Amino acid sequence: MYTDIFKTFNDQTEKTFGPLYQYNQLVAKNFTALTNLQLEAARQYADIGLAQLQVNSQVRDVQGLVTSGAKQLETMTRISQQMIEDGKKLAELAQEFKAGLDTLAADANKA
Image 1 (tube, rainbow, N blue to C red):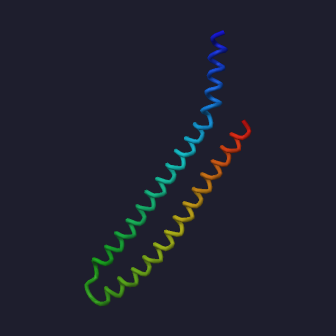
Image 2 (cartoon, helix red, strand yellow):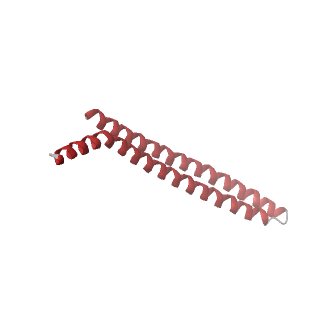
Image 3 (cartoon, rainbow, N blue to C red):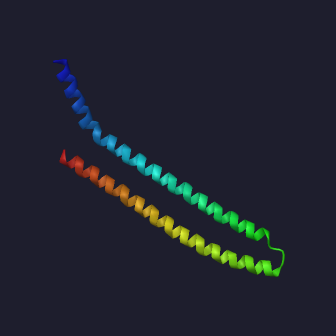
């Protein structure tokens, strides 16, 4: 008798809080991926900035200044490419999150 009551309670609790649990899992996964993306981007931009600082610290004459200017143009191209890649990664992450939310909503409508 008590076993049936606990089983029923457990089933109702799982049915009630299951979607919330799945949503929390999805949010945690997305937050982790977003944080990793931001940390990786920060590391890459810091590396680019430090490399540029290193190049600029070695300017001693006019030729060095010309070389530094050329490196700066390369750096700007690299930063632009990196920003495009980061934007694509962010858009992909947003699409995955939306797909997960759509799946959760569809599952919730079925129940």
